Image 1 (cartoon, rainbow, N blue to C red):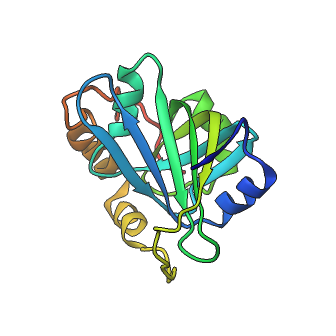
Image 2 (cartoon, rainbow, N blue to C red; image 1 turned 30 degrees about the vertical axis):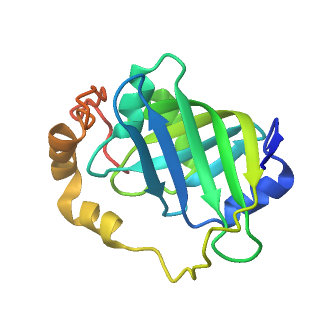
Length: 189
């Protein structure tokens, strides 16, 4: 049975900041539920009920499409302890997509390393934190980040990144629009 909290406690923040991977779950009112693994040290705890992560270009943009399609903008972020004491920590709340090139994105960007290929910052206003035992989660050893994704976008350059956004990131797998505007999104610095 999980324990629930109204905010991210200091021990939760310390746990989150040690994690190398987290999982983001989203859903539109209809269609598929999406769960995406994230890494590259892109998540920041902004406050006791506020977190954000820098979202890098990938093969789709389900989270943004789901946030645009739903009135309640529900989003869950989950962390698992793969070393040390077992723990699963979930952050529940309402998400917001801040697109590259917007004032909101620019205001938060100094909190992150500007990773080549980053396309948005996803912000979560947390209304519930839940911890559970995590005893069923196996132990894994972290070796290193994969340099493939960042290296790929460095080699491809801004023009090819924009083309990719236009080809692969305009609709979800269920056909929902993502609202990407590759031609007006500011390039990575």
